[in-house]
Image 1 (tube, rainbow, N blue to C red):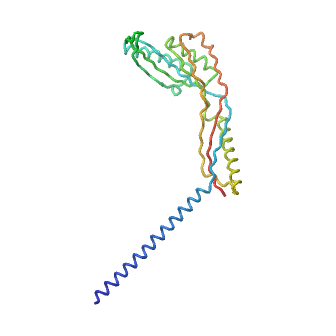
Image 2 (cartoon, rainbow, N blue to C red):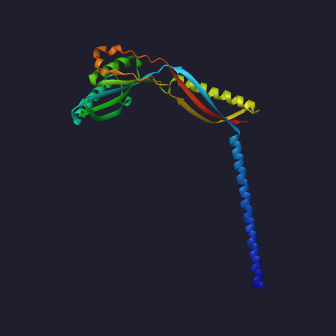
Image 3 (spheres, helix red, strand yellow):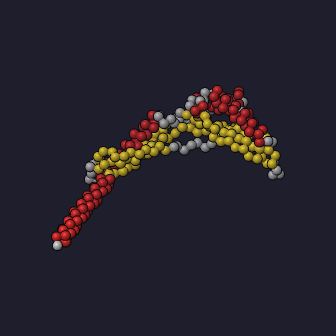
Length: 250
């Protein structure tokens, strides 16, 4: 009898412990739901607004892509010829003051060449080098001289203008974009009977302006004496900054 009673007492104790444990688990679960609800409310208690700022600026650098193309009877002859002409272009760019960090090879191609009857009679080889000029006042003269260095094998495939990322217009565009976003956010806050609190998050996007149409310049008409005959007009270029700002509502 003693053993039986002890068994019942132990069983009752175990059941009681399980009940207490269940109570703790359910209680913790309820607290987690409440914490998640509070967090969701805090996230929802914000206003996210996008602002745009555009400022006109004068480009301070220009990129040009120089190409050389040859046709030879054999593969190695074609590669050797295009390499020599490409090296002349690189040397001319260095002489113009373009640093190695502002030059890069952007394309190298080799393909069969066919005559008018569809028969293979050689190989075409080409290479392109893109260079950035940081002094626009002398860029036109240096472009002509670079093309002339490779003679009839050289071309300029296109020109594009750009502004440095640390220019004053970019700073002005950022200020305009943030002011635009804040004005919108204040209006929404007033419409909802609230006021703006602290900024929670800011995301910036800088939009690239439309590039000018590619220009084609054939080396057959280039000569060292004509180097000053290529005027370069940078004009103006828009800088657009788009910011997304999240404010806490109070």
